[in-house]
Structures are given as C-alpha cells and as structure tokens.
Length: 236
Image (tube, rainbow, N blue to C red; front, side, top):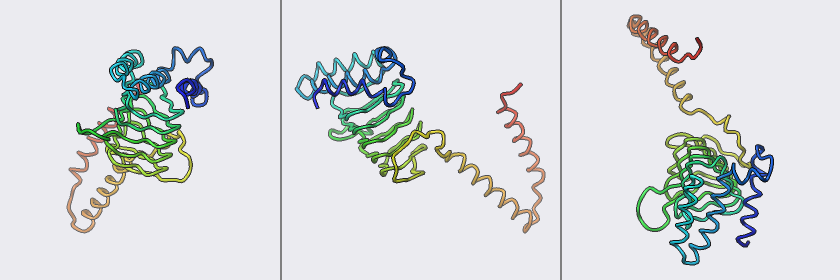
C-alpha cells in the first residue's frame, strides 16, 4: 500500500472510531493523533530511505505540534487510531499491528539502553487504555485490552485483559476486544475486601477460642474508621 493511500486511510479512521466527529473539517483541528500518525508515515519513509536526520526533524516538529512522540523507525500498521492524543510516547523498535486503538498518555517504551529490539509489540485489534505504560521487548497478544494506568512488563496472552501495577491478567476470552473500560475489575478493591474478611475471621477466632478482650482496641479502630469516612465525604 502506497504512502498516499495509507495517509488517506488514516484520515478515514476517526469516522469509524469516534462518534464525536461530526465533519471532516474537525480533523484539521481536533485530532492531533491523526496528524501524528500522518507525520510519522512521512518520517518513516524518509528514515527507511536513509534520510534519518530529516526524518527525526519531522518527528520533532510533529511532537511540538501534537505532543505525541513517535520515533520514525517504529513500525505502525494500518488503521491505528490515537484517540485524544496527548503525552503519548512510541519508542524506536516498537511494532504496532493493524486496528489498534491507543488512548492519551500511553508509553510504549524500553527498559534498557542496549541495541536491538527493546520496545513492545502490540498485535492486531488491541486497546491500550489511557495512561498505560507498556515497557520492554514484550508482546501484547491479539485482541487484548490494557486497563488505564496499568504498567505492563510481561507478555499478555491473546484476547486478555490486563490491569494494575504491575499489570496482571484478570480476564481471558476468545472474542473481539471491546471498549468496556467501565467494567474492568478493581483488583485493589477486591484485595482489600479479602484482607478485611480475613481479619474479621481471625478476630472471631481470637475472641471465641482464646477469650482475649480486644474491645478497647476495637473501639479505637472504629473511631479511626469514622474519621476516615467523614474525610472522604464530599457533601456539605
């Protein structure tokens, strides 16, 4: 596929991915992610042709205009869409396959200064949530989803959902990945719930079998808990 055809296809991608787009005119002012990809396409061709300095110049100017840093040596497939592009970094040896959706604040970075492949590979139909950091020469499998603000440092299998710091696999399925960020599990909440229930079991065992009186300490903890709840309230 030629450069002009790729660029025309890039401009058509928001129509399929963003319901907020109401006219082609908006593409020129409200979609820095599209312009970042288009500028990358030009810089990438120049970089492959040996004009590396000019390629880096174009990338630098694009970064100033769009606040998206894409190294011209990176490999980006077709119909890749950067939504609400801001603060995105895509490293030199990154590979992004077709139909990938990337939100703001994403970093596809390296973890060392060695030569060779040191950035991630994002396979087809993945969704990378806002603020996610995917670091090192790892692979995000086809159709997978990375939760917002997750830090991924290990491979993610195909059709999986990874969330947390560091990211953990919380769901695997064999269907196409959707944008249901609102139903991603809260693993921190689930862990706290487990710990609270575990403490309750231990307290019950102590009171029942050892006859240890912890009522004084329990009252103190209740006061601390009430202060915490009051501090969290936003109503007047």
